[in-house]
Amino acid sequence: MNGIHIFHRNRLGASCPKQYVLSAVIILAGIIVASHSACATDAASSGKTVFVRVGIPCNGQVTLGSGTAGELLQIGEDLKLDHAQFCVGEDGEIACVGPDGACKDLHAPILVHLAKEVEEAGGQEAALIWLDNAKAVYKGSFELSVDSKGGLSLVNIVALEDYVAGVVPYEIGASSPYEALRAQAVVARTEALGGLGRHSSQGFDLCATTHCQVYKGAGAELANPMVRQAVDSTSGEVIFYGDVPAKAANYHACCGGFTESPGDLWGTDVPYMHTVRCNGEIDACGDGVYMSEEDVRNWIETPDPKDYCYGSNGYRWSVVYSQEALAEILQPVIGRGACVESLEVAARTPRGAAVRLVIHTSSGDFEVSGEYAIRSALGGTQSVKSGVFVVNAYGDAPAKFELVGAGYGHGVGMCQYGARAMAKQGYDYKAILEKYYPGATVGAFRP
Image (cartoon, rainbow, N blue to C red; front, top):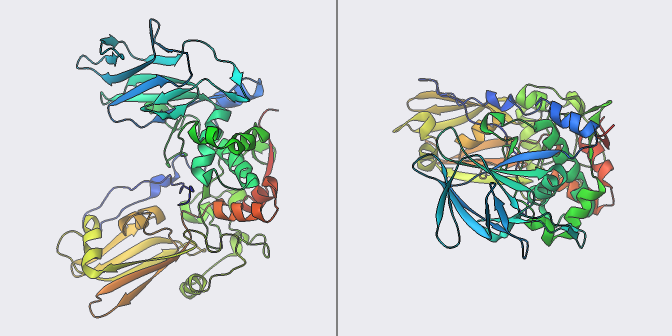
């Protein structure tokens, strides 16, 4: 995706007998109306550094090492090692294996940080810890504990601005124009503050995946100084609506020409994220956008070179399945042995995103509800890049199905490829944000 990640937060729901329904209702939980963390607000108001606890995926064991020359890791209260491997032992304690192979059981939770404070060098903090390999470096400290299933839990405790610098290059791409990087920094910071505590039941604030925001530490930031410059130049800035910090600032890779309304897609209206046209001719369409089935097809089949995201990855896309391949893909929905006779988009958002799909088969009709669930059921969100698609059927039975669509991702909020194009055309980050979050402003979250 040229460094641009798709930002999904919805998950598949449960199935129902006969009318097998994949529900996307729980998309709404913690997405648009995620509560703003009280502790973050208090810390910000007092001028204190806000720290973010980020859950890092691990496969049962991890190795942590000092990424700062001449410094050792402080592991718990007693151990100082250059690097060590950690896993959960049979006794439920965390086993720490040092460079010499010696193993010591430690009582969780365990804090791992550099043994000495390291001063800033050359404008970049030199205090780094690597995770599993020397190139995957992180700022802050790590906390290791045992999760509710008896597995290893790894949390990176990092200052907010360092967290944002670890998100920006992985969400929009480190090579993006400077003003696009600045716009991404503001929305990533807004999302982080609005989402603090989303995973509190798991012992951290935010995860490091597309469910929250993609975060991979300091590697890309250190390799691309412009990333840190973009973060520092917008330090503390978030999106405001009225006099209140926005609780969410969704974004996606490519809108295909029109952004989506969260009210239409997820059922929760957000006044500063209604549908806008992704070019310079028509600023905002608001709630008056409505596309019939014919309008959707015409939109997809007539790309507009004036769109900011024109020609980008996912601006227009298609995927073709044989009848047999589609039946196999849809097996979790329709079961074995059923023959797919047709696909019917039974409900769309006014922008055109499919939110209810009826699958007509030789064994009966089956439904999938929710944009993300539909894309997942039809082959995954990498293949079916958005909910804005039409279906073409060819041959008897039919023998082949083609999905043709526009956009990459859910379409809500900032179009990342659009932001990049606007930056190339000379718009600054505030103009970019005003485009995709109409009615919102940019301000410091510290009063």
